[in-house]
Image (tube, rainbow, N blue to C red):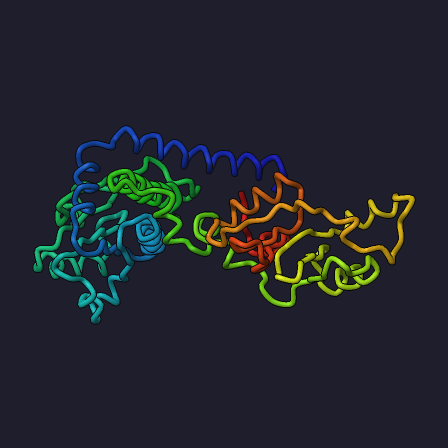
Length: 324
């Protein structure tokens, strides 16, 4: 098969599936609103179920709902018939997915779901299907054409089903007033979670800090700087108060001084008004902004008396995945 033909096939698949989504949006009506309100008003969980490709898509829908404020999980119909029906409580709601609306394993559990008077949202291709008739709400996922050239493999239909699940999740987010902070609380390991929750005190280094006194020579300071591997040394007075910071950049600039001497006191070449932070509870993302704005690599963290409590280095923020 030639390259041009392969590209044309890919474009046709995307075009076909995109058209299926555009057609479906024209069919969105009050049934969708009712589905959203049913899920929103559910005191229990939203259980998603389906077989085969519909099941795989259903698992993704359940995961999306769960991560956006709707307590949800996926259950396989076959497992439900063998005990997992006990996972469904009287205050729950079920979203059942089957393009044909006739999947044998799924149809078998519907009478048991309805026996407990549990609300059922049916997602199927045909309104006259068994699944659709059982549903309290019917959401059509009919497509005119599968992208598969044989019309057999679920392609356009699974894309539409997943998009319908996304539409439910987004509508519910709006209905609940779900904010970025809420999303981050469900994704503490993600970039947003880190940006909104990780604080300076979670990342700052407290031990084995490169510290010298105001009388330490530049030669000794360079040794301490090398051993500390932070590109900086902290200069503290007798009470432990930070009085200056010497960076590797300061050392390079010192080399241009006509009076340069390794035996000179390091504080002679240091920054006596270093940028510091006295709030360990500050968000790490805000600290990153401070570091970048002032073009420094290390931010000393001090108490209200100016005594060093720790340091936050740019590398620590990068390794932790903190972004602005």
